[in-house]
Image (tube, rainbow, N blue to C red; front, side, top):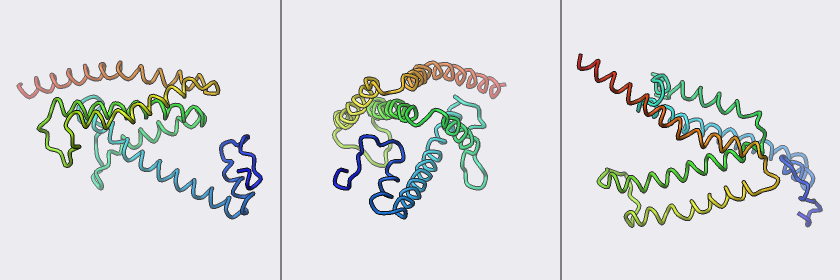
Length: 205
């Protein structure tokens, strides 16, 4: 940035707008703002549409109340899951940008690691499962595919925890949410099993 006479050492969130305005003019700063808004809206929309399917799937398996999986008659969208996810996202706005970045690195990173592990476990437990596409190389190929990004995510997590400027509150919150995951899973798994037994008893009667 020295070539255009800007010192990037003191940049904060939103400094790209100031840089675009200083280098080219106000119209480019406005364009950067508009582009950021459009990008954020698109990402938020895609995340709500994709992540709202997780509570719906949990409801189908009996881990959450049935209302999370109830679809709209018009388009089949799980309306209650979409609403619950939107409220959850909105409630995180007060955490601040730095904490949200830390939560994203920890929670999203670990969820990707679980996806790689689930991919490998499916090859072991259900090798004959019908798949629209198949990663070549067998189980070894699947593991080799997941190891590099897992190491990269591990390095990112380590750097986040080791960063002296990181928010300790954000890391504690992320660790608490991660620790609560297995506890909630087994509690909900027990609930689902009891619900399945109750449904079986009703159908037999």
